[in-house]
Image 1: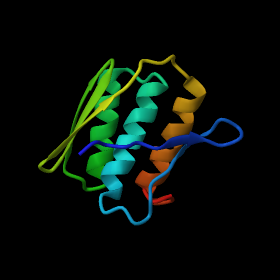
Image 2 (image 1 turned 180 degrees about the vertical axis):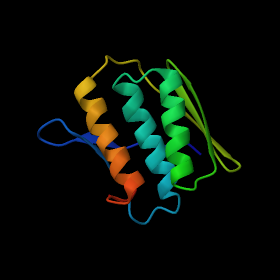
Image 3 (image 1 turned 90 degrees about the vertical axis):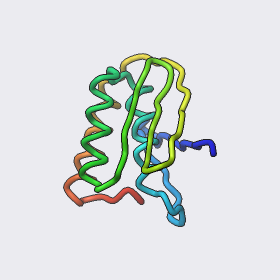
Length: 114
């Protein structure tokens, strides 16, 4: 099974994470989309692993992550997914926007479906 990650930006360049409403593994898909976005926008690997693990725990998701400069390995229960990623430049504004999305999900102001 290959993981398909959807990432778009709105007119202002703000990252928008898109997750289908009828997907059975919505939380896992959200975490993979978040991982890809944080990686592409330049979050260092060790910080990315910490952020993903913390978000997974907050969402009560059994997940483990391994991040390298060109790939993210995600394990959700007994399923493991590999996401290949091209390196990118650091985009502090977009990282800050993703941090706001993460905070909103953690605080319950937003859901992984949004």
